[in-house]
Image 1 (cartoon, one colour):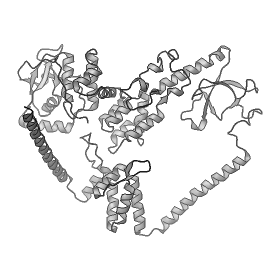
Image 2: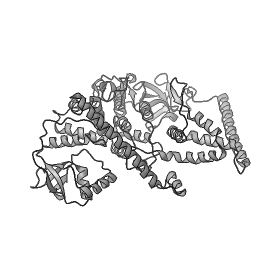
Image 3: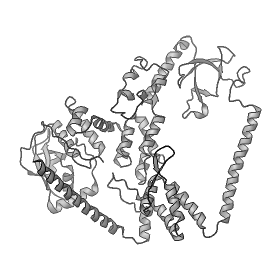
Image 4: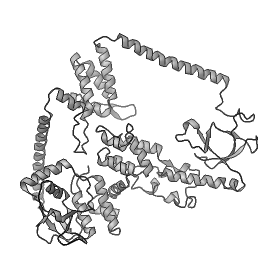
Length: 550
């Protein structure tokens, strides 16, 4: 979650001119323009309990319902108090009434939400977009940045979140993605966004499966960015067509002015150093296809149909097309009519796209059958057969070795076997769980110099030393802890996420009759006490600062 920001209220928003009134809840409608979409049900229930006991201490803000009946109001600010009052069974709520335009209403809603620490980044983005849509001349990236005290890059990044596809928004709201993940995905085109979301959770096939799995963790932002650079980004300096050509694909225009080119949009791609990167693969392919059609135009006018060929091997093509021949499925001819089967062709992909050539598809052609590099010689076939035999021998030998060990394992494992199994299990837990285990056992996370020049923590070495010093019973305990440590993961950006009853941690606690509710209450009391102490300390420091400044 982002932190609360100081927002300067616009001079266009009128001050309160009416006294507080008790208004029936049935006379108030929630605003459809409120950027806030997420409400924590547990916190609403807690607020409802407080309202039953003390009432609503801070009035909500309403305005006369536009084009509505008299004594009907639209809720401008205070949606949580309004909803909690309904839960508490109240019939009225204290409210201040203002005459506000749609723009003033949206601005106040945005200001109120920004001043809250728990506003979701996507709700914040919708607020900015709503203001810019209502008054595009007044609200721009620059004016919004100045108003909220943030940089233009920050505002632009938030606005970009509005481009997230629906399924990505669901995962973002569910707390499965961080704002950094969301921003990386929001910069992509819709079809690429779906691929990127799948890449974030390679073990899940659908958004529903991601939301259902409470332990689902996205890959790191670095891994996601590397995948985008590898699978999505294209360098137009290697394009076979002229990136400056305005007429190649009139709907897209020149690449030199396209906002999807990294160099043309530094606010959206601040970290991309290379300025010639295209981020829209579909547009790039459309230009490539248009370029290919231009090259084959003269052939078609002459009544000849060119075959479509690729220089990529057939086994390497991810989504092979039925109308494209791949390398190994054709043979290049040196000239036209070199054999009766020679046909004109055009390369449709890669840096040589648009290149015209002649090819032969006849595998038994006496002229071209021997010119392919994919036709193995007898010596090559013999060598490949020996390699395949060696591979089968190695696989079957390893399987038999494992089977022989399995049959000789004693009823009680030796210390060497147990240490080996534990360290192998530890290695498979992953970096985050390594850190959690180190902290659980109080192991020193000493940094060492890595081979690539930086510093890192060698958790495998730390665990290896600790395991070798453990007593036999401690080794068994360590095995159980390793099985439980992954349940320590708790997404702090989703306060509704509680420990699942069917998790290993909860079931083990129940098996050993551990009072988890009591432990949670103790933690809550300790943290509440430290929070109050810190708040009092900050208030005292602020008072001293104000006194000194007078």
